[in-house]
Image 1 (tube, rainbow, N blue to C red):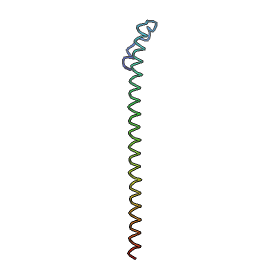
Image 2: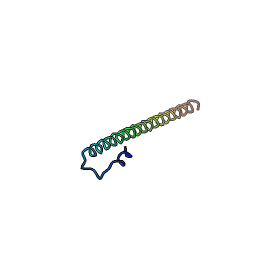
Image 3: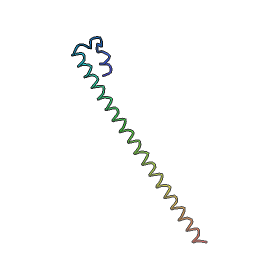
Image 4: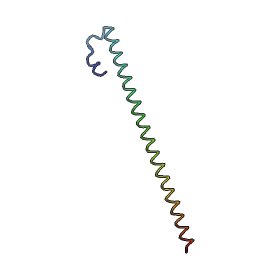
Length: 80
C-alpha cells in the first residue's frame, strides 16, 4: 500500500479519479495498520497472560516450600 501511495501522481490532485485512488490507498493503509495494531495488542495480551501464569506458578511454589518448611519444623519438634 505504501508503494502504491508512492506511485500516485500528486501533481494531479484536482483530478477526481486521482483523489479517489488516494482515498482508496489511504483506506487500505489504515486497514493494514489497524490489523498490525490488533496483532500487536493480541501479542501484548499473550505476554501479559504468560507473566501472570509465571507469577502464579512462582507464588504457588513459594507457598508449597513454606508448607514443607512448616512440616519439617513440626517433625523436628515432634522428634525432640
